[in-house]
Length: 169
Image: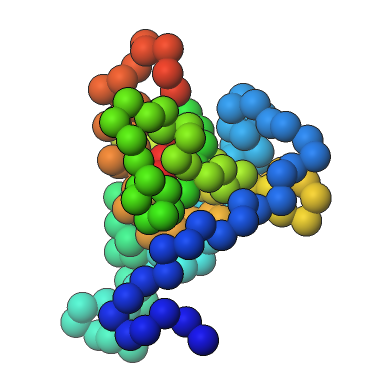
């Protein structure tokens, strides 16, 4: 049974298994770049056409691209991968024990996943997730409807040149 209705379980679950092989941001980016053909094909199949406004039974080309963060086929072809951001979880129980001055690293739990923005001319359009799964680092999510990527790109640009990498929680 779970917590009473309207309440949340604030216990910190055990962290996911630690990968036996570490990975660098450059390696994450390479895996994501290798996934770009999959993203392009998915967008073409699912976003490359949509029902025509004046005839719902007919399909109009290129009206679905914005659903995936692109305006047209040309932008889809220009897509490249940006700087990966490592993902962490911040559990409510960890916040309950927070002390002023405590390091963020003491509060977060690694997820062993990275979010890699897909960009066109430096603007975030979509994202590819790379994570530890089935004993290897691989693409674990591709071709989401864009939501995080534009904001992540804005934060990365704001903090460019600083010694601390941008991470996501």
